[in-house]
Length: 311
Image (cartoon, rainbow, N blue to C red; front, side, top):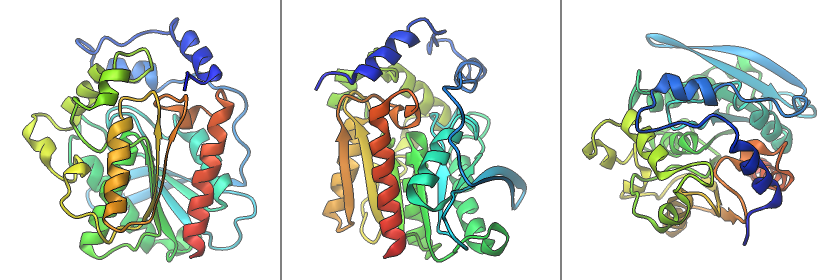
């Protein structure tokens, strides 16, 4: 399929925006550009947004709790881990995404400001996300949520973290998760996949050069990237994981590795709803206010979360 018309229009607009030279860029350079997005329209209306402090051993993480209208008392909770290559991204960059997903699922969403690389390389961000999930399950009363109905979600690097949290939760005996929502997730550090060759030149927003830069900051050195919690595709056993939604994008360098991870989950007996969004690029899920055809994918994700919580 050709590019979605709204995606093409967005890419044309982005041509005039400042560019990152990943050969010389610092994390501060990337954050200055990507962590200050231009707002598109009014914030998505939602019942309640609350700032939360997650007190963990040796550190406190900021988080934001979204509760939609009609969620009822003690709603289910989705932990959300934002994308940004483990280096960039904030609670604000994914505020709209979390609002829309909470509304679509009729469940609460807790977005976590995990610590970022390279100041905090692997496995620090992952430990933050898992420990925050454990914290949420133990603090259901103060959060006003149902601790028996818990899911994890994330986009891109956040999808990587969500998948890894699901693996740790399985192996450590909890918390019990109802679902994992993986939106164009990073699952491997293999840059030879066909979708990198077809889509990694930078013309579709995310580039191969950019992904190498992100990996170099998250996991310095190639060998550690074989760690099956850094590159979840390296996991030998994917059985016993919660049901999954895996959404990829046709014009995304990460398309093939996301599809491959979904196939491996299914082969391991995990119930998976997976699809590649035609005409879409990396990041489309969070650009629904500019890309109308992104909204059905948010609605599909929300419906799958609601179904998993109801099971």
